[in-house]
Length: 241
Length: 241
Image (cartoon, rainbow over all chains, first blue to last red; front, side, top):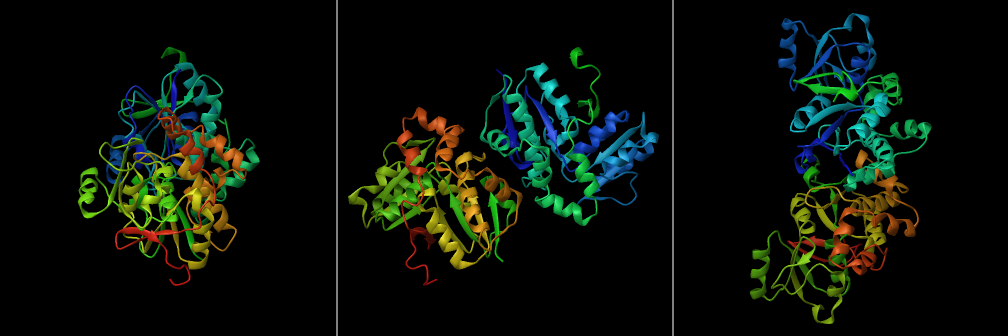
């Protein structure tokens, strides 16, 4: 039976073995929600980068450039970290270079994994189906906020554990158990619960409650973005792997 | 209003400011449960140490020496990590030098705090009363297991948050919220829940289920062990501070 672990902070990732595992990277508010939206809406690829200057330089190579720091779009970039901006028609078929405070960092830290896929509430069932099909050991890697554990990523981890544990996956660390126990069964409770959390309070101050509500919707998109040759792309065919 | 934070792993402690805070160190299975038991049963002081060799050397200075690694008593030491062994009459008035896999390490990492106190289910209400009286910012520092988050320490953090949040403490990070949400109201659920967790499975293999049941009992002792001049002692008088 495949094992299922959860890592609640990127600062704890060094404690986990990544080789031979599928890592599901999660940054619900909002990096992975943006990535899922972008790939579902027709963006060709997303190049995750660590720093804003490397990201900015990709403009000259035909990329749209996207950067978020501390919840805000960085000046001089085409895009920030709102999922709605990734639905625009002019982005269909385009490449985006993307750097965020937490989400793109956790992708970098997970690079020893056999495969990295991008998870969000927006594609929860698609991710779960893919993992059930693959039957490999899974680590859910939460991006958190500057190393700190956050509630929204933990809740997503819990939602995913809740699905996989009823199948043949074995919960193999306490963080997975903790996340599953935390996850409320009702969507209305999820919204109420997330509204308590620190990052949502930060985002409210930025006036983006609409983004928060969007990012907490389940199964809006049926895509599994995956890292291939350094870029996030749509999985061509799940059965082809 | 004083703030209340929880840190679920010693590896995340560097993200927290400790100065001007009371840090409650927690290692339910079993270091802080042993310390609370020892101090409540009349041990004069406990010197927490990082390594077994430094600890062993204290024997010549009149200390009883105690060491646990990987759940087991280290050979050549007087005591291990079972709370029952700290109830012995010959320990009354004695000094113990103590090193454990996780618990004594988190004390070392918390040394910048204004004050370090020792928490366990065994003295939950005594700790809560003391914190309510002091009205200082509080950080609950969970020892975990070799850097990993564990369920039993998270549950204790949740129990403490649950008491303090109904008073005038402000929950100030997501880990505190997460711990509080996890904490079950019924003692029977607590036992059942903890039996699922990874460290309990490890301890069961060592045949110490009796220790686990003891360590999950609330309010057996009315003491607040506190670090003074490098050693853990009984708080002389709560009101004297």
